[in-house]
Image (cartoon, rainbow, N blue to C red):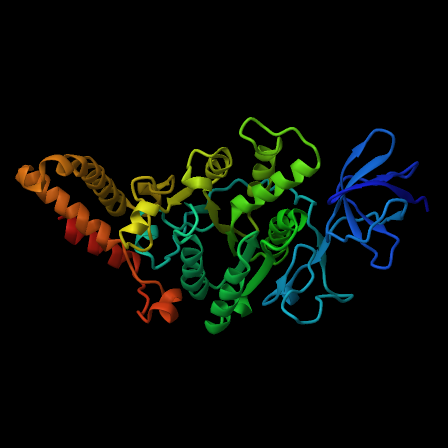
Length: 435
């Protein structure tokens, strides 16, 4: 078999010269050293040069070493044996338990896209109760759709995600996935402890590539987790709850790779392939006639700038966007949702019913009026308002307080028991205020 020779190394990028039998893009090649280091072929240059990524960041790779083709891509174990386990982007265990391996354990190439569904039949929307008032009211959680939790650093994205896992995963009979993409290691440990305490690990698959990992693994972990979810959807016909924290970190990792690959950035400063990177990943988080994938994705907002190009692109792929605000958090309201910026294409009479929809329009009108009256009150005082304006202002203040609630996952920190509200209880509490 023809071998390649490493001609150059630049950080995580390894250039391998193949005179013949050139590998394919997305193929794994192995360095003939003591570690049998794996390289992923990112793209090919004319003349038989394969530009590869050093997946594990092995620093013992040297110029002149031989490289062998494997004629396969990154294959991870999938199926029932992965449930309750924590794995990295390559399917290796991170929980201290033996590797998920064996003759009868199926594997899946993470970069191989599934066949497109030809069944476009529209199923009746099924609303899942989250028990969180502000989500159930403003961004209904519909099976098979995508919801995004957007906000800057430290406004409660991860806590809200953990609460959703606690509430929705416990009630559902489906399978839960969690992908930790470039976030803090501490948060991964806390999530693991929370799932273990609530006996939810038996229905959860977890993939992690936290801040300590190199950008190759951080970008691949999102793809690996989605590939595993696709297997359960397509082969076992399961309904999947997919949680990703944080989808912006996926773009950030891709951007770092773009920089070391010497690619010219796009106008917004991101990698030139930012649109296709986001689009391909989001398209894989879809439902078909075999099963559904309902996804919750947190999106970090750099410098609290909602107009950031990457944030905008991710938003366009979502059905609902829940915006967390630092100003709301400073008022002591949790979850710190900016209801005026929160949007959902699922808040329609066909999905939530006439009662919920009409109520949402009235609430949004009240909150918009509240925002405009705040500026007037700052100048002339509340007593100078008309009686109807004062009444509406008071209702809006009560509504904002009504959407605050205690989280179950924070009970061990605060000592305050968490709240769970059914959708009916949420609507009733709002009707009492608005009426």
